Image (cartoon, rainbow, N blue to C red; front, side, top):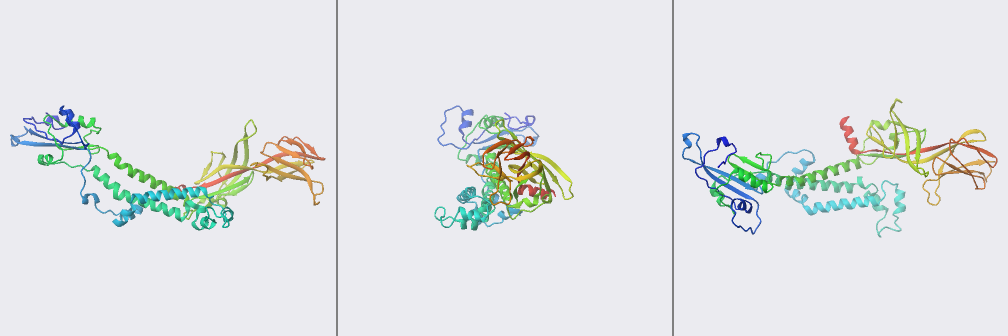
Length: 490
């Protein structure tokens, strides 16, 4: 019967005696007699074999004890082994490891961590319910002291606690820091020691020690190979390597499973820390801005972007000039707007074009860590010819009639413009593809498409719609994480 991994060096057995921890699994395989297991116990098996070796006269007639130990869970470390030697960490982790034990015990308390997570969730809900980034006058109207929300909530609460910029406010960031500290403390004091215990294996060195265990059993015809088959049947990964679940040290064997589950809480904690770090960096180190630019005009990125937190630092890309070459829209067969596009050119301080792209909704432009999104559009001006004179640019103003979101209008004076009762021709449009005209009495006069060059005469005035000039609504953002990576590269 082989008891070693190398069959070429296996001695011949003249007697064998195997002591085992009692186990229903092994009992059912090696001993088919009925066996009842009242309490479910971890799998623990120890085998001791007496072999006779033929290697040299010195070993003639001597018995060599062979021991195999299997356990569902690793033996516990002593207090000194669990604590380990103090390490001099760096950064946030180093600060956590240097905290007093009482502080670590409080921070790693599970109810405290749960309360911190609920607090963060409640603040996020509150930040979603309260409009962010508005002027103080907005909150004066929305949360007046004369009619407080819920009987006590007024604009003073919003502005004092910084709820108008919730995700960069001290109360929100402080709660995140406290939660991150609790996660690191729990990892340091609980999860890492558990992993150390799970990875440690030890071997009993005497048959007497094996017999003193709570459960033991003798298997006269057992071998390492037999036990490997048993372990595979029990869900163990039987590979004789220190990096796997079954460990072999000379004639002794130790096995356990479930090590990956010990690392799962650490992975969850690490993922939460990374998410909170990224969110905090984005909230406190970002720039954002919105602008509506008519076709043919320019703007500078730095004039539009505004900081969102105390870590926001401008970059060289803020000096980039953006020129709107063209703005146009696509339409469905029904006439509704399906997509709008903006042809942009970016110029550096020397006036050199550094990039050009036609962006649209869900297809942004990225340059120097800054992302430009196409988010909206507007009607800037209507270019016309009046009695073959011009062209004249008439500014289009947004109108709100019956809840229409997109309705624009302009007015062309006719007659004496110095009169207090000036009359003229009204022009309305819902998009850039058609213009509706009304005479001085407000009666419908006709409809024309831009660039059609088809004239229309209203109250003795000849009008030609030359062009409809749109405005592009753009959102500019630079996230704190992007800015951090740019700083590292530069």
